[in-house]
Length: 155
Length: 271
Image (cartoon, rainbow over all chains, first blue to last red; front, side, top):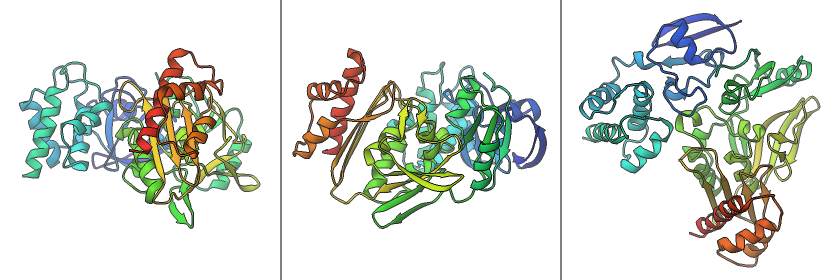
């Protein structure tokens, strides 16, 4: 077992974990933050994307011990976040989800796109979304939602 | 899809990490960002007994220009390179390569040193850096040594690193303003591991690499000679012959996609 100290959604957390525990399993099973979803568990599908020190990372291929000393934000930690508030509303209005499995990771990736690439056009948004698989929507609603937030933020 | 059990040691100094490799009981693996090793461990293709974590070791994430050389620390992430942290013409080439590696959430953690030490033949840096040329910097019990990138990778997942050595960085050439670079990756979806790679850097002399093979990436001698003689393009048909001449053991499909990658990389260099 290895001791782990980190901040999750603003809360200080200390735990004793097995080294092989993934960050995703740590937040889901040990912290009961089940908004983070696990799809492929080898870094391809993007459902498990969370923020580590403000940047999106794959929590399924990041061991919990590697998150020691970092600040993690899961989908539950964005209540007061302006870009995420806009994205939540835009996903709702544009029908950017159906089953919802990809949505937590999709929103974290979308937040990265609108904040890091404030001038992204449709091609760039689609390129950036290559790392997040959605098998319901065909991406049209998701792309439109993200583009609408980019447009609002430019205004 | 969960990793097998392993012990984890978080290192603070490089000396400590080298010593840990030397005294490990069973298989020990170095981990930087863990974006290649992590998936392989989840798939249980890799089952190390000990993971030596370099994320706290200082001095491995620098980028500095010293004369005609750029020193890049092993733990520099793909995302930093994508965002332009490496200066000059060398940096612009590396920026393009980095932007095509996997996805942003992987690039935020994956490191250039980890990629080259891991030596997956389908990864981008082993081919892209071989085209640049330069040295790999290695730490071991007897201190620091250098190995040329030429010959560093000897096969799939196999390099010139000794069992008790750690890749700490690279010394790459600073390309002049007139240098030309082209990189082309064949894959079905952006960010995937490559099915074929063509990498071309024309600095003091042309260097042309055929990558994403079943072994190590290799330099295509005939293509380098053609470019050195002043050619500004290489047709797919010629690229097929040039690659086949080095007997990489490709079937017809592999030969075709590698020839296309090489030809298009040359095209990008002269675009």
